[in-house]
Image (cartoon, helix red, strand yellow):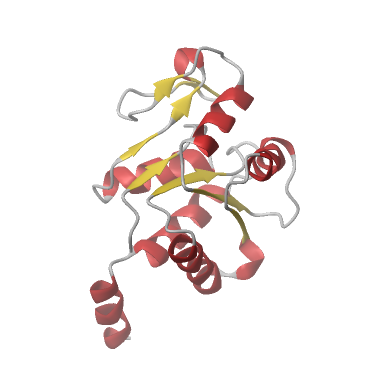
Length: 165
């Protein structure tokens, strides 16, 4: 896998789950966060290595993360995007950036394969991870973790896991 960095906006839910995954697996992480490190649960902790935008508005952070990455994956439980997740999709298209939406209906196996394909086809080195906040879709954190675990697991570990089953 060619991925070298995970970025997100630091919001609860999908964003934070991706950052936690990166930290747990020693994958460099970063991204833009609104001024004041604003997020729905208060102020983003310093353990997340994100840079503040000049504005406290979420759309600026979203747009900058899209522009500074090679591709964006939007995770969601619902198959129809709304709110900030829909805005993310529209901004990625506006900037001509590759974007992939993975809803839970796909299942973990298929979603992880789609993510691997997306990373390969678009030569993604910096992956922007987006999606609903925890208050909108509480299960999205676990969904992101499950897909990233399977999709980004080194090939040799994947083969060993399959052999044990």
